[in-house]
Structures are given as structure tokens and as C-alpha cells.
Image (cartoon, rainbow, N blue to C red; front, side, top):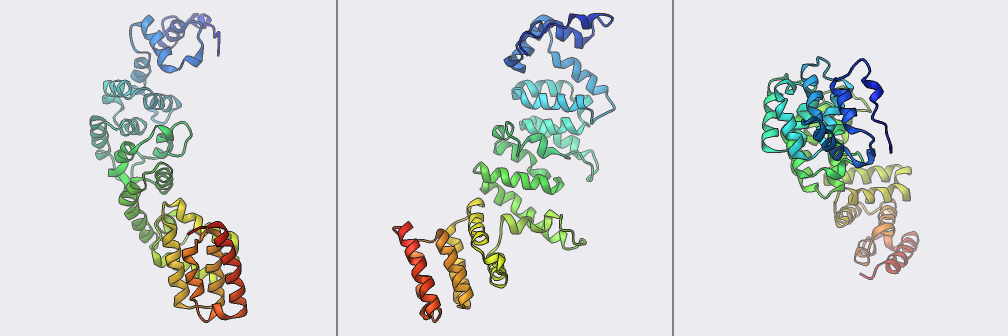
Length: 326
């Protein structure tokens, strides 16, 4: 808002209140300068940090979920870490039980902020919603926030993995995939995904229960992948080009090796070399196979010796050799 007036008219009847003083200090302002520079201008006139007044009010507020608390928490998250930590610690005594500011302490990810957050979390019940919506606050899937995250933010949440909701786990998994942190996900999130999957078996079935499929979706075992090929053999829809292309695509999305996919496909075909399995493996090779993989079809007797098998092999061989030199 270029040329924003100083709003001196707001001073009538409420002169001297902190909110008005901040507006008066800012004068006509180009809001594109950003919060940091705006705060510097206000601080120069007032001689104090403009957030101090608001944080003091938040300390005494009984409404921990107010829009004002959300704004202040987001502001402490977004300003430089040193400034955010200094302001948070200054008002920590009154904010230490507010979930929003506990999440700020975790987000800042310094040794001291983590210690203070841990102390506060230890003082609330295990089922307290102190970490509710933490994924949205951190911004694992939010443009403009996810780019600021790193492994240290994940480490801040490591001690509380069991307290995070399933959608937060999914967001963290997706974040790790997109930012080259899959080793961390494998070490920390994989065991939790399978723990939740086992626990979900004790609950009544619900198709919206994400816990049941977390492990299978992100960390499938060889047996689970072979079961998906079995399903494709039995269901015509699942053995379509689109479904089999997606089956291969999931390997890349997980950071898994395509070589694993073709090793499993070869093992599956050798276990029962039927024409349907031959077609499915041929389709997989059509989409991503290389010349070295052709041997699994060429040696799949007696299917490859039938007229139908020979025709399929000829078609796939042409496609693969045209695409791949090795």
C-alpha cells in the first residue's frame, strides 16, 4: 500500500495507545519494505520493539487460539531467528503454555528453544493438542514456508513423532521426498508408519484411516509390491498401461530404484510364467525397461515361444532398443 496515510485520525479519543503509536511512528509507508524494515522505523521512533506491546497482551490473554496469537506466532516464526528467540524468551513465562508459542519454540530449532518447548510439553497431558496443526504452522507443504525448512526443523519434531497426527506425518514424508531428506524419513518415519499401520488393525475399518496405508504407500516391502502385481494379474483395470506406468512412477517418487522394480517383476514372472504375467512385465518394460531387461522375457519359456508371446516380445524389443542403448 504505497502512500498509506499515518492514520492520525485514529488518535482521536484513544491517543497514546500502543496500536496507534505504532501507526503514527510508521507515517506514510511503502508496505513492500517488509516487516523487518518497518519494525526498524517504528523502533527508532518508539525506542522499543513494536512486538513487545502485543506479546505482553498475549501473555495475559485467556484465548490461546485467537487470531492475534496466530499472527504473533507467525511473526516470530518469520523474522530472523535471533530476534524471534529473544522476543519469545522475554515473554516466555506468560506464553509457555500456549500451543502456538510452543510450536514457535520448536520451529526456531535452537538448543534453548527446544529445551523450553520440551519442558512445556512435558507438563501437559499426553493427549493434549499442543502439536495440533503443527504441520501447517511449519509449512511443510506451503509455498513460501517449505523453502525455509531444513533437517533441523525435522529434528525438532523427532521426539514427538507419536504425538503428531497422520496428516502431519504425510506432509513430512512428502517434504522429505521433495527436498532430498529421504534417509531421515527412512530412519525416523518408517518405523512410525508401520507402528501406526499395526495399531490401525485393532480399530474398526474406515476407508479414511490413513494409518492403514502409510507404510505400504511410502515404504512398501517386496511382498507388498508383489501383491500389487498379483492384483494386476487378477484385475484387468489394474494391468492397464496407465496403472502399470503409475506403479513404476511410484518407485521414482519414493526415491526407490527402478532396478528393484524389474528384479521383482522378473522374480514374479519366473514364479508362474503365464501369458497374463508375460503381458504385464512386457508393459512395464515398454514404459521403462532397458536392453538388459529383455532377457527376462526372452527366457520366459514356454510363453515366449507361443505365437502371442513372440509377437509381444518383438513389439517390446523394438520399443526398448529404439529408446535404450544399454
